[in-house]
Image 1 (tube, rainbow over the protein chains, first blue to last red):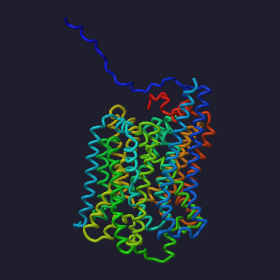
Image 2: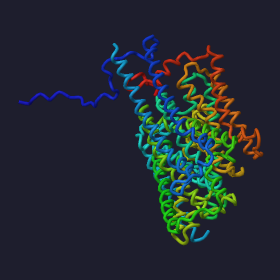
Image 3: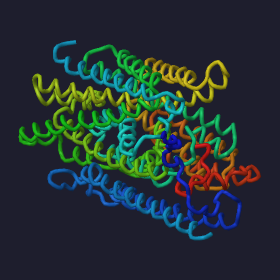
Image 4: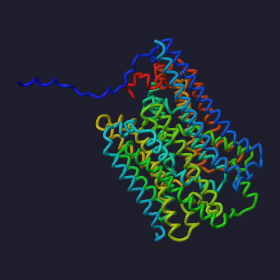
Length: 122
Length: 508
């Protein structure tokens, strides 16, 4: 009348390391295909970084030159505050944050495209 | 010491105690060597960003900028801009790859990328040199603060900071310091923001008086170019921009923080939040600089402009209210000394622990013990220097550390991450040229020679020393192409490939 003891169940968590469903192109192997893929990602990310830095140079790096070329611009006042103080003390920071945000969005998109690309090819 | 010094004294005491308490709370969570060096890489972006902000906003940001603005005017606004924009450059060029490199420190990165012990040793020396150059003004600022606010002898401040920093980092390492520094960011922001708002209200209540001095004075003060604003000023301004924009990524305490992110995208997001936190903070020092021109002009003429932020509340508001506000900013300033000194000391302790003591003492002194011994040396040496050398001016000395970082680690990181043909010989040659170039300017500044004519190139060296270092590193690498490490491709793939591809990260 005694029931057989239930079989022992081993309780485990989800696997720690995320398994990739299909093993994509092995990027670290020295194959011509992986080299092409990596080059494309590197070039895309470097172009993006370059674009952001050029925008930084145009938006912020050009300011000393602008103030140098247009004398009197710095003292011009807006609401009692010299223009140079308004631009350099306040106006620059939102531009920096905006550029940073743009970079993060684009860089993550580049990486997603790259993952799709390597997964799409088997 | 008098009754009116009491709020400042209480403020400093509370900051020191809070730092130690939060630090020892973190200690219960720190057990392994990895905890000590990089908080076991489990810090989320918002906490990590607050910690980076807390660590980064040093005495130069909290006290130095406002003082420089009072003395020299709008051209000094380039310091905070550069210190913030430096994070944008870091974000675009190194943040995610650096995290993915899986190295603990800059010397680790150099060794992993170039496969060379020599490059590692060169980087270790540089980390220690830059960090100590940056630590000395922090200690001196602490001495200045305590002597101005509570009338203590100038050696008390450095000693208090040194002891608290040492107690904090040798007990808890990176894990506990993360919580401490996140707390210190918000403390610094509050301690600067609330008095600034009240002082602005007082200024408006006084009928918004303008500064003394005529139109010529105002024109000079609102000139955003250094010095007289001529060609020389243009050079100095652009050189400063280059040093700060590119130097941030090479500061030892900044870089070590990136290894505490869980992955590359988290490192990017952390950096973005840091940009926001720094922008928020740096809007405030100009308020003190501008109000100082109205109420505290004599501080500039007597050469005590570094204490402007501390003294201004007392000068503008009589009685206990002014003392309490002064106490609050003193507490904030102390948080600035503690957090930056802790971060720098950790970076140096890590390098000394791993590269000097671990090797030199072999089995008898490993891991955590070597880190602790490293921490003692990391703090004591700059402390002694700070006590024996005259004060260069906080922001000036920190600016020189940026120039050296921009001329050495910036080329190494940028070329190491994006250029396949970098070799160890090229890297070491570039580091040497950059260090000698920018370092000569440091010596020049210490000798306080006049800076007319060509000497302007030595006053602010980054505009020539950074391109020179890049050119040397690239040129010598091209001449030694047979030394390109065999694993370069694998390493670059690891730096740039997204984590979701689950590459082999066994060593990270």
